[in-house]
View 1 (cartoon, rainbow, N blue to C red):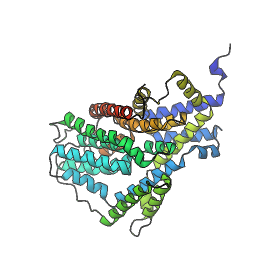
View 2: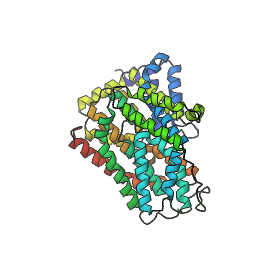
View 3: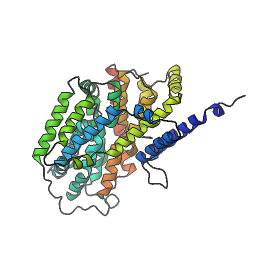
View 4: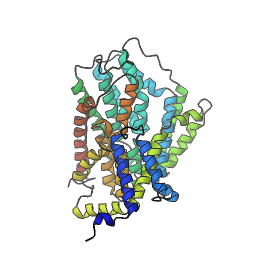
Length: 428
């Protein structure tokens, strides 16, 4: 009697092994004893797939969704224009130094972080705002940790509102050819409720404890004495960025493909008498773009084995396709907080090539909100923790989870009711 495992071709076994190792690396963030990160892990796996002949150069090119990468790149250039004008630092410092109560400061942090993330992509926003927010809050002898949790949570929730708010939404929008304004109409309400939930949960969890952080939270680089240096805001460069953003939103109302509109705006940003294009391009997160490209290639190699198609057929026969909320919700929660919401979405869409429109909206909003549960759930959370540590503020896993778990369950609960009540997805 033949053993099924031994009947699998060796190349298929090798592809599956590299695929599994890649996503284990996505979950762990790095391999013990090595300093290789998620991008390095995915890139090495893609190189090995090329080397063993599981992929050819032409197949790699075929696998990469270039329109998605073009949109990501273009938004990063636009965001670099805001950063070069000093806008992010100015916003963070103004929020931190406002002569208001801690409750008001938290509300402004959530509103600003969520609002900017809906248009300028959440990862870029938190990367730019976190250090100056820490400096300003420590100068006021306030504990930055609740505000950092609020910033990360708001960046995730706010980014869920639009098709360009985060990398996974961009990919979903490109695959489903989703209209910008229709996406906002479907996902905007649960995203807004998510922002309210973030504020309420953080405020209740930290009420009465917004004062100066203890020694366990403030590292050697943190100081509450003195004040942060003022930030110079280049209003001319900021005006250019604002006009470009408005033009981009206008282009989204036309039939012009999203990636072309974003690239046109990015190209305009690179034409400047004061800002060097080398500096602008230096602010692009090339690591994230490489990660996307490598994951596209890895998932395509697995697709060529035929296993994903067989798996999806099995799910469909068993009635377990994630086109229902009873399946999509726990799947998004588990996948986003194990391998991360961006790799999870790439993996799911590679295995499930033709989801209905309602399922795409559900995947976008649920996978994004699920990223608030734990620190590894989204890249925005990881960025906030790492940038805060570099500023001398330690945000621990448990501290985040105390707010992340309730804010995620409450916001996802509303999103489920919204998607069901508006008829986009059925419960079971």
